[in-house]
Amino acid sequence: MRKARQRTLYCTPVEKATIQAAAVKLGDPVSRFVITSGLRNAAALGGDPVGEALALTGEEQRSLVEGMERLTALDAALREPLPGIGVTALEALAFVHRRLAVETDRPSPPAPDASGTPGSLFEPPGPAGGKL
Image 1: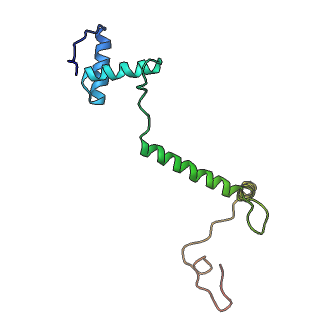
Image 2: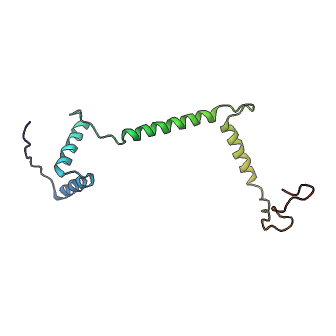
């Protein structure tokens, strides 16, 4: 194993402060930060096979794929015809949305009286079944 050699890099005070702050943010010594940054930059330029660090961990990638698979399955289910009516769930939802949009153009009915007084929504049903 070769002995490590010291190298001198020249930079402005602002560049030095930026490098030091980035190293501290990653929890690395400045020398390790400079070396790994240089190796990644060389890989980006096609120099070494070191490559860039992945943005997501393996677990995050698997979670993302599983989420996309669930969304794809949901999309497929929404586009399947519903049994017995011959329309898809998306078409049924579009119909309900259109109906609600039309009904919002009309004045709203008065809100039911929730005070519990006779004739209110909460009146106990009488012999004829009462109001609902």
